[in-house]
Image 1 (cartoon, rainbow, N blue to C red):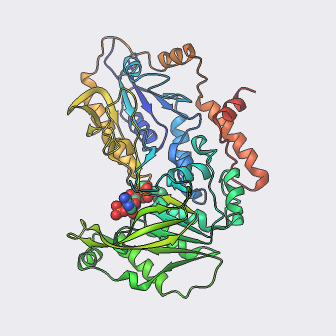
Image 2: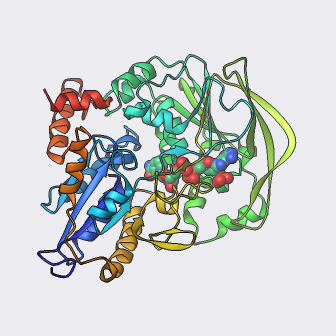
Image 3: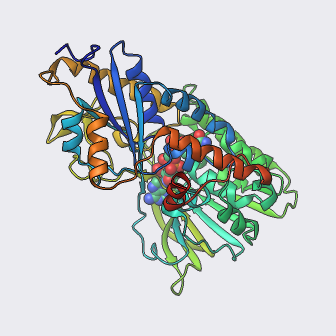
Length: 459
Ligand code: NAP
């Protein structure tokens, strides 16, 4: 038996999750100069994770990375195995037996909670639900969103909140030629929401939007971006943050808010109002959201570590729907260590740890490794770092017998009667989605149910 990574004993790696970090880990392994075989397992039949089901439908350029991922997937040393839930259909121990290493790149699939009364009222939703719904993610296909009230509230001032607010701010015709799921377009086109509050618990200098995403609100066809100038007064510590030359993004964001505040509101039919230093303390309503009680905050602390502190002064806003967009959180996988407080797999440089010690053969990259931060490209360096840790460990892997890799996985799935999906299958679905979209002038019309996807493949 040759050394691991040689022609007769390829380095076999299972990657769990087919989003950006999974593909960047694959790319790094393919460039490692070893003979490698990579098997990527994905819970859904369809690949690409948040690029397919997170990136907003009106941001098609951000989805172009899919072309890069598809090229990676076409290499002969790579297998895509979709419609497989690791921890249920196949265990982590089975993957460790069939592969030299397993890399978890399964992202952050759930949300953080506000932990306030009324959070579970009807009409209170996580951003994840709404984003998954309009992007045709099967898990959220059948969610319902009542957009009959004039006012919606989005809690949080990150890019996900920006996506949610922008989609609410756009009219049917503005969304019609995107890849938005048809069930969502039908509801959004009839939306009666005209005012969207986007609420930050800290100040305008701490908003986490990226400048481009905030600027878009000033360019919407039927929606004004509104900021009350009096809300742009700064604490000394915030002024220092904005004066810091190494922090140009925050200054751009602040200047954009200032530009919104000085604009004459043009009387478009919709408006997005950015407001600061307010935390939701209760969602109120008789079984259904009718109002949100907010507490006004002050900031305390040094530059870059200012936190919001409630003043006891409250106010209420009437609203029919609330979206909590306060950050994603990873979900535990049976048999894999999990840090439930932070929603990540505990690790040191990508090596998964259990009680502080490295768990042999198991790695993590992307949001499940470091938490839900950064843009798509941030995951490349993160995955490269994990793959470097893995490559440094190869000498310690068991080289006494060759690993069976994908063959063992296929045997296991067949024995359980699981209809797994290959990359060729995905290409069939991809083409059909594109064909379905064409008559509507859309880049694609997604299949939004797992059964529907599988039925397409087995007709
Ligand atoms: P995020 O950027 O971390 O923003 C979370 C927001 O929620 C912050 O404003 C945060 O305020 C607020 N928040 C947290 N806990 C809160 C609480 N208890 N009460 C009130 N507000 C609370 O997260 P995200 O928007 O979910 O985005 C995740 C990542 O994906 C980010 O890196 C983002 O840039 C990226 N993303 C990028 C794009 C794009 O490039 N177009 C699109 C979508 C997402 P504090 O600052 O006070 O904590």
